[in-house]
Amino acid sequence: MPRTDTTHARGRVGVLLPRDLPVRDVLPYARRAEELGFDQVWVVEDLGWRGALAQAGPVLASTTGITVGIGIMPAGARNVCFAAMELATLAQLYPGRLITGIGHGMPDWMRQAGAWPASPLTLIKEYTTALRLLMRGEPGPADGRYVRCEGVVLTETPDIVPPVILGVRGPKSQAAAGEVADGLLLAEPAAPAYITTSLRHMRSSSDPGAPEVVTYDAAAVDDDEDAALARVRDGLSAIGEPGWAAHIDPLPFATQLREHRAACADARQFAQTMPASWVRQLSIAGTPDQAREAIKDRHAAGATSVVLTPTGPGSLASLDSLARALDPRP
Image 1 (cartoon, rainbow, N blue to C red):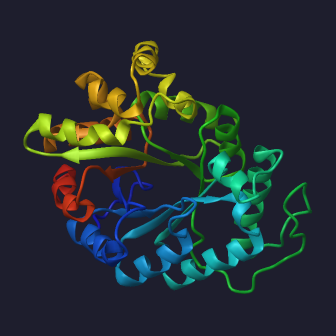
Image 2: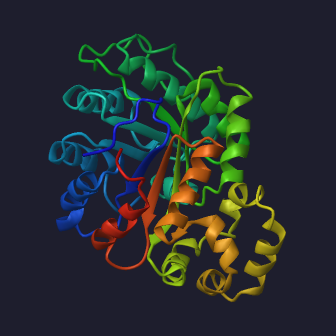
């Protein structure tokens, strides 16, 4: 069973359900994550893989208490009224066990699907505002540039409305999370410096309440630190590309990292040859004690939930090793 934590979701640890996990392993993976004591399991929605809502329902049904996070549903992919109905239904059936992540979506994918707006920031602000109102049973807001649901009211609403957090990277989008959402979802790598910077962006326009801050990180745990670091490297191969600038800029070795990426022939060479000290900061990897310390550092920086992304072959089998990074039960 998930561990009990009554401090506004602080100190929680989750695990990501990999998008390429064989379908036969999806529900066993979720059940095993719960058995091992993870607080949350997160499902992803990447174009061409599996839908978030279609995964979340069965995962909730096949477990008993673990929280299921959706990270993320692109704002341009679904009409907000029908998205609110789906999410409200899940929240009714499984009270207090759902967190909803909304984002822009990857621009190339969204353009392929004909769902990339001229102003992604305007869309996500309108969408998030409407989604939260509708799930609370309040009338939809006045029609905006993209979202039109004025006066729509859901008759079936949950007693516990799920938090809506924004999976966004840029300063303006993170500031928007402070205006219209319950918090942030920070994609990997979520080093403590990136968490701190993101919170600064969000709090520039948020209320003083403590927000939900969920972080993703590539993870590997082994008694042999070198083995864990070797296994996690492939999960870091995309770092250094332009889309990850927000993650890199706060790092003390940002300039050196970019120079290293430019000197490498490809992303795999970049990941395989970066210094071990960088790997430790850009992932949650090492011995169980080292992984626990990395998780604590992220919590100390402001994360309320630290989500581990399995790396290397055998995602289902790797759950047991990742669980060794959990604090012992009281």
